[in-house]
Length: 291
Image (cartoon, rainbow, N blue to C red):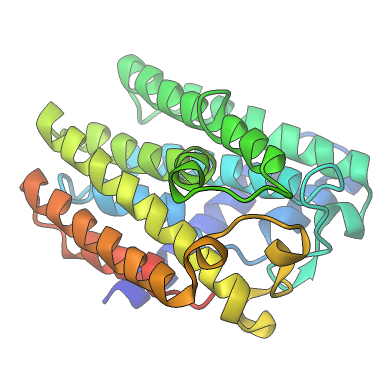
C-alpha cells in the first residue's frame, strides 16, 4: 500500500513543485538550473512523511500541501549545498552530475539560497493556512534547518572528518543534520492535523528514532549499496575519513542498532494513540530502503 501511496504523492508533489517554480520571474538560464535540481528524481520522503502524519488526523490534504512543498525545497537546498566543493565535494547526486558540476559553483549556491528563501514565501503566502499555523510551520522549519538544527549538524559533521567518534557523538550529529528536518515534518503534520500536545510529543519521539534509522541505513548503503540504485558512489564516507555507524560499530552491529531504533519508534507510535498504518510502513521504508 505504501509503495503506491509514495508513487502517487511523488507525481503530485513534482507537479506542484514544477508549477510553482515555473511561475517565478527569473532569467531562463537560471530557471534551467533550478529545474535541474528539482527534476533530479528525489524520493520526496520528507514531505510524504509530513502528509502521512497529517492524514492520521484529517482526510482533506489542502492545508498540508504548501508546508510539504516548502519542506522539499529546503531539503533540496540542503543537498545542493552539501555537495559543494567546500562541503562534501560530490560529483553525483541521484544518478546524475551534481548541480555545481552540471552548471557552476556560484549557480549552485544561488539555486540553493533561492530554494531556502522561497520555501518561507510559500508558507507565508499560503491561502490554506491561518496566521498562527503559518507561524508554527515557519518556526519549525527555520529552527530545524537553521543554527540549532541542520546547520549545526553539518558543521559538526565537517569537523568530525579524520576523527574517530563515539556512537553518542555520531548520534548527536545526525539528530541535528538528518533528524531535525524529519522531526519537523512530523510535528508540522501533526499540529496542522489537530493533534493534541501529548500526541505531538509522542510523534516527535517517533521522529527522533526515525531519523536515526534513516541515517544508519544511509551509512549501511554507503558500504554495501549499489551505485546504480543509490545514484552516487559507494564508499564516499570512507574516502573522506568520516565516522559512520558501520565503521564505528561494525556492519552487523549497525544493523542491530537500526532494528533497535525501529522498535523504539514503534513504541512511540503506540503511545501517540493514532491509527495510521502508513506511518509504520514509512518506518519500514526508511529503514530498509535500497537508495
